[in-house]
Length: 97
Image (cartoon, rainbow, N blue to C red):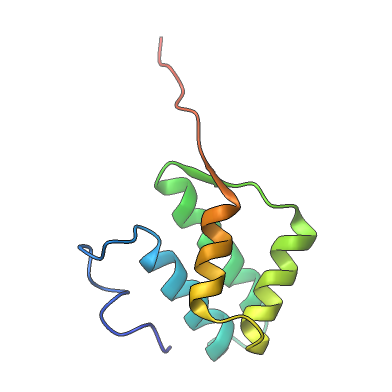
């Protein structure tokens, strides 16, 4: 899988989204699985967002369209990252009793 060199593994990268972007890009573009690569790429991006306190707020059709465009090469990694950033919102923290 072609992860962006240096960005996927470097936790000091200035953009918190570097890992989710790199993994989503690698899975969507390199097709490591026989089927479902675009779905896995989008799900993985969503999981990384959730684990870091963010939530993807884009409608399902828009999310699918962007991930399909990424896989087809119509959208590059940087544009996908910009879309993830603009389509995400900070998740409200739950207060524990």
